[in-house]
Length: 120
Image (cartoon, one colour):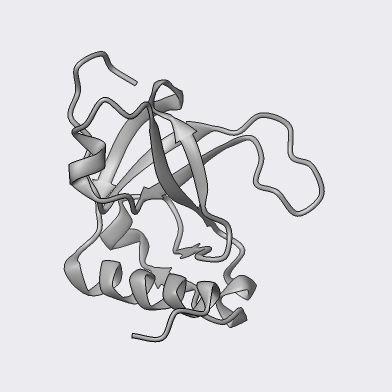
């Protein structure tokens, strides 16, 4: 991450996951920051994210959210995988790509609540 750059909930960043293992995300991929900004602005060194994939078949999984390439500024339509949250060190973030709109972020929140079994 560029030193001193502010990061915010709802932003999409490039992150380096390294070599994938089983069903865990791997390689360089975009992630959506879902952690509340009060934590993002604190001294906590980790940021909670969910990965994105161009495998649109994963849109069939409960809670996952489609983000069009026009919205994400990525080269392809992508699926936000809400069932794979990660806490990543903020130094792993490579480059900011874009920020999703409120509607997409609300869909992600609903999907994560579904995955966690939290009824609101």
